[in-house]
Length: 518
Image 1 (cartoon, one colour):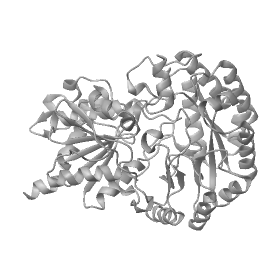
Image 2 (cartoon, rainbow, N blue to C red; image 1 turned 90 degrees about the horizontal axis):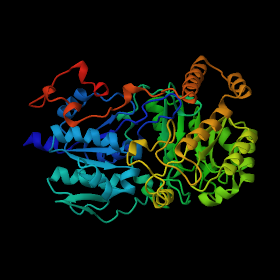
Image 3 (spheres, helix red, strand yellow; image 1 turned 180 degrees about the vertical axis):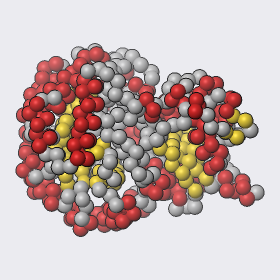
Image 4 (cartoon, rainbow, N blue to C red; image 1 turned 90 degrees about the vertical axis):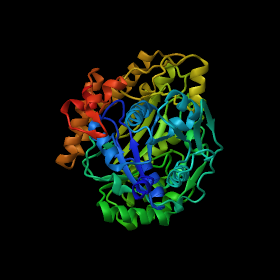
């Protein structure tokens, strides 16, 4: 009886591996969203473990041994669109060897397509859609009490052969009521390659902090609407201040990534938070924001409080496409914000663009983007290919026009390969070609490379740029830049975890049972 009770309070949370593997030119951050889910359950007495397979290799027998040793009642997955396939592969292993465990999936993809997710992926039992903390906690409490999961708001469940979406759960009104993420479950020694944000090597001890959730804007390409609709909620500056003090004390943080979708949406908030950042003596922090959310004075205040990077979402150099995207910015303000950031002395200023950000973008629009990039005095650019993520207006436009050619969600990546879709004016191959052209014309410019090297102040920083630069050149030449050690290969259920390694739930080590070799 005691063992049954113990089992019913144990939970595992999993972040599946990125299908592109770990590469030196992409950002890799810690699973703060799972840290929040874990902390919310832990405060009610649940024993939670986080397995982060974006950070460490997925090895089949080792994974099964961890499940056997922990004996959880529920295993939760956090999946974006590109990782939902790998998440389901892991859920399939669980169901084969531990069919009694309830598998729960949440994240942007299943929030956008809750019913379809359960129909498409039979080894997920439950979808938690939209905000996850309170919903997942209720599932855990029902597990502990031996109750079924019918009627839990914020879930989609199976009932016989049917898939039933329950009513929505209201968002948590006061974000200050949510405990700080359980970083002790994942804030380990640095294992990531690449960077937490362009310009900040992952050899630094960094972490993410959210000061708000959501965004009220209606950009047609943005998938945040699937999780938070068009709402935005803010944490109080005092609570953010307490969290920063805690992470500095416990983890000796070198750099903090402010992970808000748009930092500083509320008037006066940048100033209030920067005052708190200054009081904590942050070594370094960075953020993503809109060009119309900052002023010359607010950027100076950010710099004085330790801000060493600001990234602006621009997406296009075409006024026409900005209107199609419903971005609600103008190019004059783009130029102005970047000049102000440079005048303030912020070390890194980044502008982010999307090739095909709206399916009606033309070659003439792209030429305007290229012209704008040449004008801007920026340290970094990010130029991705449009991805029609489920839940976005673009997804509906792409589907309606028959532009999507693939049903493999693992192909829904913004970088590294020709997409499985087209736009009105560009084929998949052309989207990739123009992405490469815009990236290489910026990064492989000798004047840019000399400017970057002239700003290097340590061997650690130099090593980061050398590794990133080498990976970028390989990508530009069409060479493979993925880290195959971190990828799940295709498999049949029988081959993925061979039966000879499974006997009465006693698993043995075997070097050939690394899933990446199957």
